[in-house]
Length: 207
Image (cartoon, rainbow, N blue to C red; front, side, top):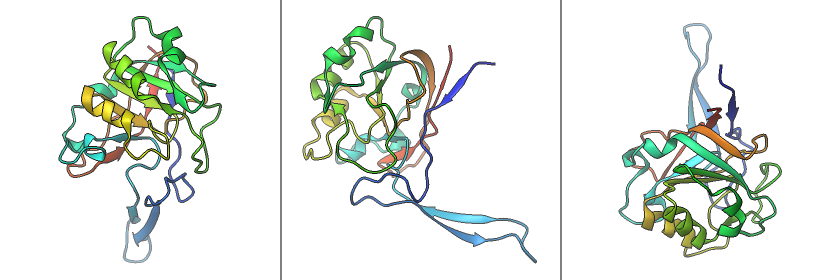
C-alpha cells in the first residue's frame, strides 16, 4: 500500500484564525438518548480555517465560486519544494533548485512547524514568483502559511497573479513531516456553489 501523508491541520475551536474571520463553533441539535437514535450537529466556521482552497471570488468580484472551479488542479502529481529560511517573501531564487521539469502542482514548505496560533510573521509569495511558476506550466500552488500574500497586504498582488494566470491555491497546509520531492496530491474542495473558499482534507501519496 502506498504511504499517505496527511497535510491538513486539525480544525477546532483553537484553530489559528486570521483577525476578523469567523472561528469554529459546533452545536448539538440531537443527542443519542431515549427517543433519539443519533447524534447530530451543526457547525459554523470560515471556509478559510485549516487547509483550504481559495476561489477566485475571494479576491475578484464576480469571479468563480469554489463550487464552479475545475477539480483537475487539486488531484495529481505535485512537487514539494523546501524553501525554509526564505524570509517574508518566497522569491523564484528560493525555488529554483527544484524547478526542473515541474509538474503542474507545487507545494512550498516555508516553516519548520505549522503554526498553532495566529501570527502575522509568516512567509508569503512574492508576486513575481507566481508569475514565474505560471510560465513553467504550474496550475496549482500551495503553501504552509496562512496566505500567499503578507498579512498586512491590502492589494493582494500574489492573489491577483493567481487570478491573472488561472492558478488555483491551497493555504494552511502542514508540511512538517514531508521531504522535498514528488508526490500525488489529493485536496478536493467541497462543491459550495456560493462560497469564496472551501476546506480540504489535503493528503499526499507516494507515487
